[in-house]
Amino acid sequence: MELTVLSLFDAADLLRRHEISSVELTQATLARIEQIDTQVNAYLTVTAERALAQARAADERRAGGETHPLLGIPLAIKDVICTEGVRTTAGSRILENFVPPYDATVVQKLKAVGAVILGKTNTDEFAMGSSTENSGYFTTRNPWDTTRVPGGSSGGSAVAVASGMAFGALGSDTGGSIRQPAAFCGVVGIKPTYGRVSRYGLIAFASSLDQIGPFGRTVRDAAILLQAIAGHDPCDSTAINAAVPNYLESLELGLKGTRIGVPDEYFIAGIQPEVESAVRKAIDVMDSLGAAAHRVSLPHTDYGLPTYYLIAPAEASANLARYDGVKYGYQHPDAHDLMDQYVRTRGEGFGAEVKRRIMVGTYALSTGYYDAYYLRAQKMRTLIKQDFDRVLENFDVIICPTTPTTAFKIGEKTDDPLAMYLADVFTLPLNLAGLTGCVVPCGFADGLPIGLQIIGKALDEATVLRVARAYEQATEWHTRKPGV
Ligand code: GLN
Image 1 (cartoon, rainbow, N blue to C red):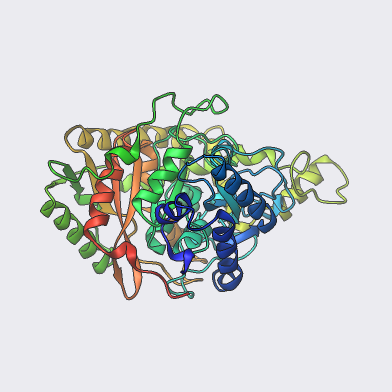
Image 2: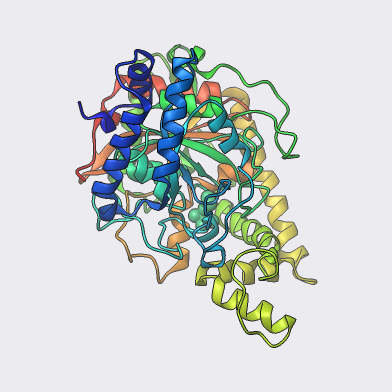
């Protein structure tokens, strides 16, 4: 049996019934990585020995009577999430040799239930990008067409899950970095509510927007992962202290009576016709399953992109001040004084996009410009949030495209930062509003996946997952596999 094509749920079932061991499952996944990762470059670091040791431990725990659905399941972790004793680069040369002394809370939680960590996946540097082309190491390739990008910044995690190199993965989403690569790679991705999942041990990009979330091959797989990582954490003061519902219990309850808002502003000029028609057909499918879709308006949508590209760089410029060569990572070897050390360390350690963000952000925060840029962006952020809140008073979910197009060609947008930023025009507003969203495959155009975005109220991941699951189970898109 080819184990690596199974869903996480099905693999867990085989483990539970003792038909396979975690060691076998882990060996099969490592073999798959060995066999195909040279074609797609999803992993920055593979920790085969550690993974096999964790698999052996998981098998022993199962022999001792433990049963968690993640016990013995091989997973991948985006390289912006700290792993004790395992190099964590954030896709940056400045952290090339950084080995964290502790695990992020999400990693601790996965280890506690016996998951197996295969390694660390590629990302745009400090999660700034939409294609993994800003990685300081290499570009990850889309398994559906290796001349195309996988999306970003969590491109490595999306590719690992799409191509049988992990049964699930964690990513981070500041402006779309889970949802956009999930759409481009034909997998499920969840951006949890801001504060639903601890960010302790997540290398910070933009602290009022960053959120960790899971990738899965099915909605159920992603829900199992979210269940394991969600919840309060005293180590992260932004983690919300609210009970986490049982997502699996409500997952199969169907769509009857579900009120769906379809925002006019997300079907704009420039959207690829096949993307629009796939999303509209998906909404028809949901209608036929008992949901009721209506047109709604999110009038400040146009301002999402400029608002995000002031707030995110402003916060990034502050967060990245710590990489000065004193405590972390790369240090220029022969600077003649402290200022020279800062300048050369940062000049050599950061890539072009990160430098661009630091400059934009520092400018937006500087005296005289703060009111004109940062403060106004914050006000606009409130208006964007109010748009969503108003619609979600009367609707259970909002449904729209995830991206205006399918995966673009490698190199197509690297010389035009604005064109690259536009890849996230449908995902950024959700982060500004702090809400939750799930992406589920809803079609293909020329062999490339299209993703449906389902947005829900704060802390209402359960409804979003239920809607995504009902649609997924009524269609067959999630059963297709890429050629690699
Ligand atoms: N692509 C967006 C950016 O470059 C979002 C990135 C993310 O969500 N981490 O900022």
